[in-house]
Length: 234
Length: 272
Image (tube, rainbow over all chains, first blue to last red; front, side, top):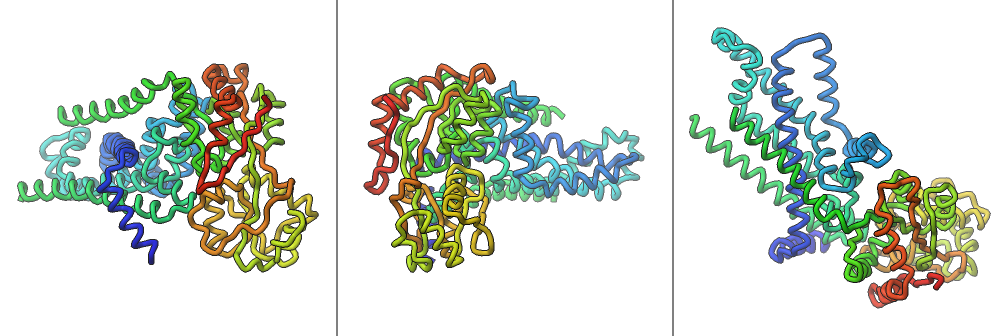
């Protein structure tokens, strides 16, 4: 019990104290996870929509693989990216290992299947509903993608947020490809692992609460945005 | 569509930015693969700023188990190596991955256990005897089980005690030193730790230091220069400066000055 109370005090002190190290870690966490989600959304949303609109041989296989990849263990994603970016690996020349860039790449791999798979489902439902209307407008399937994505945007916000949740919460991938280097690649989740391993449980839990508040803030922002949009539509 | 293009541009530039920020100060730093015991105890936080002040070179520490540290260095992903497994280090040099290995500092391993000491190891004469007592009592023992330097040393000690550890009481956790101590505290198990991690550890609960002082528990740390032939892309001159500084009077003094809770945790022993 005392640990829990301690954690809240620690979290509060961390937030109020605005410790420069902590601010750096928070900013890096946001930078890495938001960049990964942004890029994954740019690829995943059109990809999901395309899978909703086109049928082709092997379509079912791709959908199943995409759905399965939603459960890809972060360590496996991290290890794959590590082997890719390691000096002995095919992209070693880039020198990206143990940098925020490597962490962004690993998180894109984790987030992309979630966004693409869930977007496919959302767009497919919408497409079934409006299929005849869209066809009667004479739109080609390619032109339908932006239209359908735009019409599904309120639901897609949740999809993107699910991706952000995955990115900000994972530790396995960023630990391996980032190396948890102090001041360079240390993010919230890897800092929590480090403090836990030092036996500094109140600080670890406090950092966890700070992370949770941060994710809540991002979600609140998205909620306000979609509420405003809904009212304007309404 | 224009809107989308703008988002795409932002995303790409974000990614670019984070990489550029990396490249910018990339000139004067090295990546050091090292062990969790040195990082978790706070040693690097204490000595690296002094090295940086003298040379202007930053040291970025990737703290992992010794087995993984060797692997990182073997693949050419670290400029320098500071670990504690003399046998493994010498093999690393023999295999041609390293060009030079030097003693930097030492401390010792200690045997930690629940305060009741159910196996009665506190009065043991030698560590071999202490381990035999644990095995006889079949008291829970938490092993790192992760091929780290501590894990390798622990297995050698079981061997010298003539015990083949196994069975329900011997629990291989496959974790770092800190997580292993957390787990041992949770299940009242015996555990072998390096002294530095143990002293700096904040969650001991009912665990206590029960056995120490046998020469067999000696724990040597060594610094290794990585072969320029095998990995020409690494920052060898900067890594050499780090290696030389660790062995220099200034570096050795910095190590000796480092204390946690009033205790010196690492004892410099470079050959001058």
